[in-house]
Image (cartoon, rainbow, N blue to C red; front, side):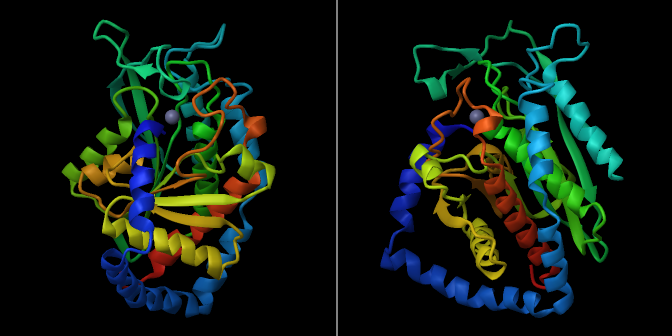
Length: 357
Ligand SMILES: [Zn+2]
């Protein structure tokens, strides 16, 4: 993700998240109106059982194996401008092959959408976390791919719940990008595995995009969805799961922040909090509001899909290894990420079964 935007928005978000009478009252009314709908969804023993069983299916070890494959061995990075010695494809294409291979193994068809992008240049005069800088037109161009897979809905297939993660690592630096964002990629892959045998009412779509090359391929994904007239009712972006401050890591905090941009996104953020409580997932779960769209969820907000959120480990993002060579998988908190997978699954299933959504 890109933190310079996030920090500003986080500050603004904190300012607006406080007890400001004029702002808080309508939201509370909103909650009162909507929470019973979810409680009603959960009152169904079949739905309750389905959610519990999906949550129990999340495997920390599987997420960990994907994470290490994608950010250590065999792939130290996932970028278009780095190819391992003796290999025919660059490391981002190799990551694509890994993801597509798993998805196909589980019975999904995988769609690819090519986008022309460049690697960022590096400006070492800037702070470490923000050294990406604009490429020149004469720098190499590459085709980066968005990968899509989906479970078609049974009764409302035209209504789409989208779960996404950017799969590339930082193109301007040799960082494994474990927390940013091999962990989110591994998390979405685990969600796809678990949902492979599940038949939803609405369509659940998975998108693996790119955000550490330029332009971001999530922009094309969102614009094409809009052009097709896709009815995307919710967007969950998983980025930087479990990435948090050294202090939070030291005390073993299991964190998640759900950040939304527009009011329609707040409902999803509140749902994340509600499922965390209802299903005793154990996250220290917070909600913040961005003042402007950001990250890959922001690409969808800008395309008119305002029901969009990011799940991220901290806000402002506090990972001391952010955009550094030291963002390695050994430092990732995989159990924390697994809890976020559980909560996101529970939220998706709840939305899927909500007659009113
Ligand atoms: Zn990033």
